[in-house]
Image 1 (cartoon, rainbow, N blue to C red):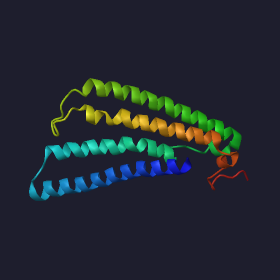
Image 2 (image 1 turned 45 degrees about the vertical axis):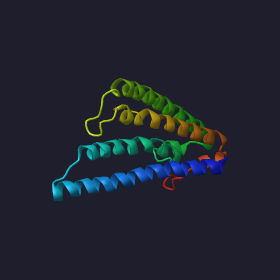
Image 3 (image 1 turned 30 degrees about the vertical axis):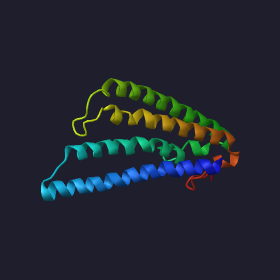
Image 4 (image 1 turned 180 degrees about the vertical axis):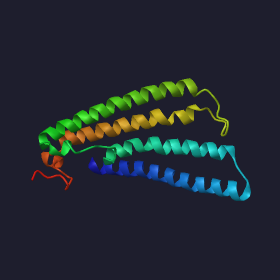
Length: 168
């Protein structure tokens, strides 16, 4: 099961990395074409904005899986490992509530505003705004995975990882 999860995470990361790489190439191309040749395409500019939004929201779940979200461990590192497990689970519960609110309201927004046609690519805005709830759902799955890992992890997994903290 861990092997399958690892493969899925690599694919998930690969999609994000590919999108970020494409975004970098397209932004450089757009800047060169605009400033050196006075050429600009509204479709490409809008695609770049959409791709930027995609990479931002796609990274939500990756940050959860890799523990890269913002955290302040000053107090947390002083807890006993058994308490840390509960604090971690409470943290995931709070993250899930926030993520569910994000999915709900982004879905509402996408359904309401998605009927409009974009000016650049001339597609329904639902495709652009739909990025938010879809990525939020993926993030919720990642939160569940991490919460299950926290429940199953041995207490040694909650030992202090920051060498700067000491009780001496």
